[in-house]
Image (tube, rainbow, N blue to C red; front, side, top):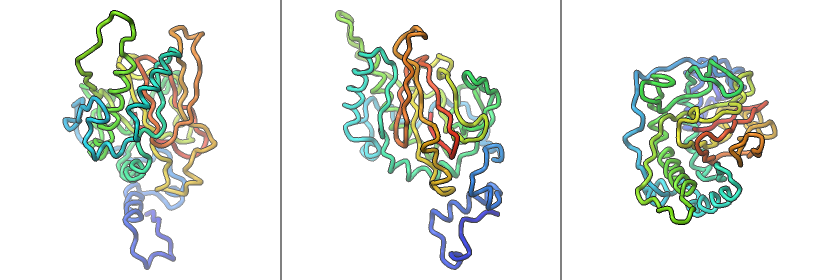
Length: 305
């Protein structure tokens, strides 16, 4: 079995973090060499939690603004985020853009505290997916927390991982609601202002780990939900510093980030824009906006969608 405790430290009691990592390595039945370089997702066992067709977790707060979140959840969000989103949307709308990137919208320190548990509970599930322009049918680099009615794309979402991420999902839901309200606010004279609140309904939620292995490096040019959802949010998660040396696990300098084609309804007139997203950055994406997760050639890159 794998162990992260060296001969020199065997006599000392392991820290809680060391114990978590050692237990995780044992669960996956990896050799010491495999564990250090982080094996490809194909080596992970499938885990099922029974059929689950519920669309949204009932604990969701449905906050319309960040300020409506409980104080303990507001603490996870960037200060001044409400105003930053409003100003960012205005600039993007002037450029006819229908997406927005907010740097460190979720505090990286909070994500760092959550990431070891995310890694422990992450077990990729194979689903059938068109893979964007790459047309990759067998997709096994994501763990699903919530799925669409009828069990699409899988019937076995990881409920323990959903439990761990409910507070984070509430934060991003509130951010998305405020962004969407600003993005779709009517600016035309004479048209009435919408008074009724928006209701966010997550139809699918998953965490993806990209690697440098073939067919796991990227999600190439695509639109979310085949253009049938009103919008989406993508949260960049921390670089994995818990299952191996950061020098091995980091993708810094080796690709990554997100890319958009936006600014016009005419494809030939669209601008191609790249953002080097990092932990805590959130991408808000309007309906049917083309984008992609850029390839990495080293390390691993994590994101929540």
